[in-house]
Length: 285
Image 1 (cartoon, rainbow, N blue to C red):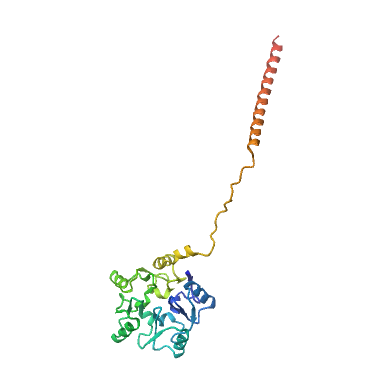
Image 2 (cartoon, rainbow, N blue to C red):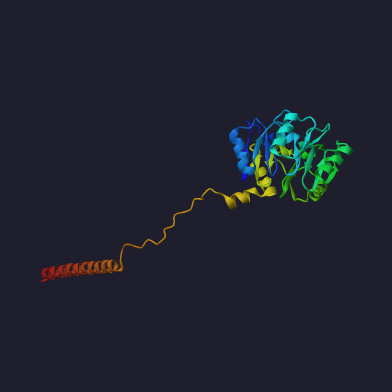
């Protein structure tokens, strides 16, 4: 749980190769075994390897909620069979806009889709999720799903989204959204992140400020600090104070000795002085 910073086979566009919900995560077969385990631990959900439309690009061809997944009509029969075996509820949309993940952003409150979807396709998407669907491009970007990444707590959107569109999206999703970039300035948020309500994986190509900004949108760094299993180093504190080995009696003896030494020293100096005086008197007389 929390945050992981990673790449897949040297590629920082990690969001292209995975589709995550709060119940499961689908990943491409190109992702290494140790990375699959890392995803499972970070997102706290079971991870399933498969292809979509004959590719490893699960994030490009999938969109949906915890309850329902939508995939394009060009998906393969064997891929649909795997989804059935996994018990994942899905719907197939016959459309020219086959990059479903790039063209749709949806949660339980609403959805925004590419303007190029037909009125009938918009109606079908609305019926599948039982939510309000807005058919609109965000600024100059015609792939709204590519510039938004949300979970149940909040979301990150492209820094180039206008105030008006940001407010519209916050109302639609009923979430607080934060502007930002990933992958060193890229506005395509979804390609640089894999996120659900338990954690997120961020592209290693992203800068520190970008990662911290993403954390502010989702709040996972605070969770790490609060629930970290790694013991923190603490300074050694003895249970009892170490007492000075010199007792009060010893201290008194030391004081007495020092006094006696000073007395004998002054006495010796006196005697030497008296001796000098006697010798001087003898010489005079």
